[in-house]
Length: 92
Image (cartoon, rainbow, N blue to C red):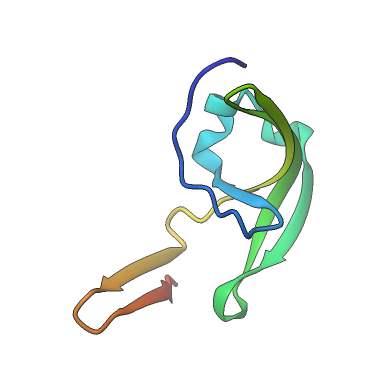
């Protein structure tokens, strides 16, 4: 794939997490990926699919581990600037 994508990078993360809706853009098929589980903020466990991607930054090519998550319709995010807090709600 040679498309250019823009996204936020967490330079301190061991693995890059991307939402499931990016699979077609990344040229990936979920049925061909390894399934796993990950525990995140607040002990919330989510289904993941793991793989590796080649990422080009300028002239450098990196091989990174990514974890695809399906969080659509599972969480609600509240950004409260006034009280300087972020709250994640699990939708039931």
